Image (tube, rainbow, N blue to C red; front, top):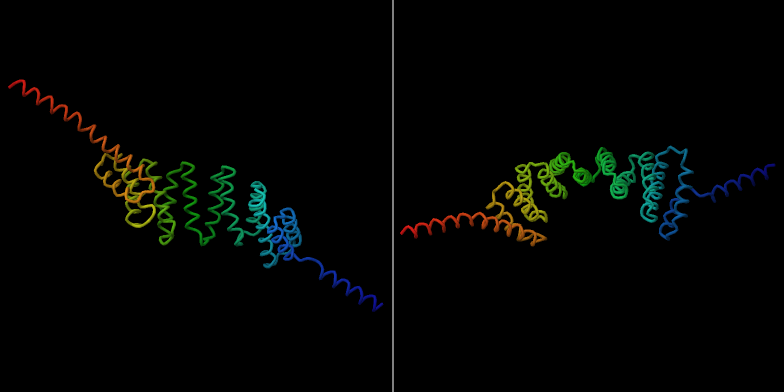
Length: 282
């Protein structure tokens, strides 16, 4: 009996050693993805999740997040199945909300919702969920939220979100983009003076930035609409030095020049008429 029990114990240990762990399944899934064996990769991630189903330990939570992220990326990147990718990204956010994978998943989910399902409001909600966790990418994510509101035509909220980026993340590389977006939104809200102030602040704050000539061009447009043609021309002349589309700037300058000539023409006509009248009188 003792010999039989010892043999059974040995067989159990050997079989346990041969059984794959969830971590082994994750490795197999990663290798299958690398070799473009998508169905096998998804099956490996499914097996890992099955093994982790009732394990609430912190280590299991880490593996669960990796398995869900891996499966979502297979659907998203390799297979282009946006619908299934959205489902798995949402499950990742539900099951492992504080994991690094969930943050990346939220960002990618927002892109899918906007680009593949035309759901900008859903994308905003997902990004705000990410922002509530104060991630390192907060400035970029808030700028994305501002851009989504701009896309929706909600220029009031877009200008507020843009201003928030500039206020809260002063050292961020996204500040100039946010200011430019804020200025555009204010223009479309019918607030030219406020828009002008933002564009002027952008040009002054980033004198060597890529957006400076664009902001100068926009300054010219605002000033022209306000009837301040000389200041508009000065802004466009400055923008012309580095604007990526100089022909666009030259077109504005030509229109301004034609406007001046059109205004002068009636005055010259009256002058000639009076001169002729005087000559006849003599």
